[in-house]
Length: 364
Image (cartoon, rainbow, N blue to C red; front, side):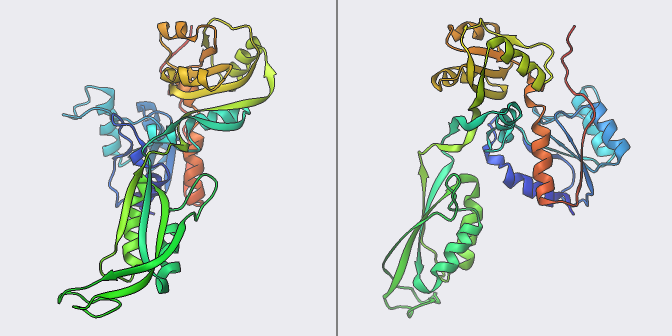
């Protein structure tokens, strides 16, 4: 297949519109028209990973952390970013990244952490806002099912674990076309009344263009009437972090040992113990200390994340045990998410995990 096929799928499965403004997810290096046969999945793009991709003759590197964050003004090899880019171009290896957008999707980084820990009743800790739209359109009765189904096929109508969700009312529409029209029903120059169905449905904002394209392609009218409304509803299926429950409770010491074991963390840092048992846990892959108050409000006994600053540990105020397992350790399982996504769509495409340890932090 072509690189653009893989990118198009990942761009929709892990929507680029979900990334933070500072991020740089998506295709960073490579011609979208290039034929590809294999990919190497990695957390970070390093020179060692690039050497591995070259030796394995992989066409694409798919990473969680982007290689390029800032503008590149030259390609002289003076920085590790420039050296890797030079290697990628020289050996025709594409680089694709899914970063903060992979953090917020329903099956993203934090949920993978929760699943590895065996948590149950998992929910999003900080649901995303302004990600939902309501689409309203008017369809002649003869084409109602066709148009409705096209919108559903484009991804509209999904609410939580339910799909094909919509609301329908019947009424009478009216219009008059001028001399330049070819009305599907009625005659130009004459006002026409038609029995129509008002159809309302919901969709994620990143599906807007796809849904409108599907609507216009199958709707019989020359001019398709539709409205889009931005909804203030929180989307409880996507967002940062998550919270869940263990089937049994842990002591704080046993919980810390368990965390160290699950994430193979060699230097777990934690706040002053509360002396309380651990049953409900909030967590966020990567730098999630800003979610501490939400973790406390959720009723969690412990909050697991990374990159916690010195003064943040004071903010727990004996309300919660805050644990820093390390950035690399908290996100190491993200490569499994990416591989599963790719294999599900392209089962015959060769995908393998990088065997290079890219953690830049060492412990004495």
